[in-house]
Length: 152
Image (tube, rainbow, N blue to C red):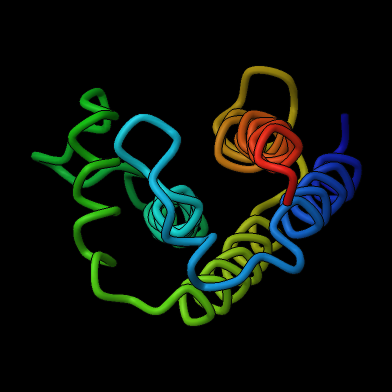
């Protein structure tokens, strides 16, 4: 897939995630149901990964090492917990806006990279796929299923 195709899939997946949360009240957004997480926590987690991977893509665009010395993304659970904790007091509407803004920055950073960085197996392709496309496809259906189960 080309960069533009990957970005189109990213946009489509993100729209699906936004549709999955559309119309939820603050109370519903704060209800814990996904392990220890609420919808707000899922969105904080998505926004957190957007921000981290935006910085990674920006470093690549500057010709720097994508991951700074001493940073390791292997402990995804630890990163996720940090993203959620950092937004523990954030209002649901504010986290939705943060997620939208972080996604726009993520896409802008991807657009700043040369096309060849999005060839199969290259970092740009992997980042858009894992942080964007697959991530949205992971969370949107689960939210829809929860809503259906709860009748919301």
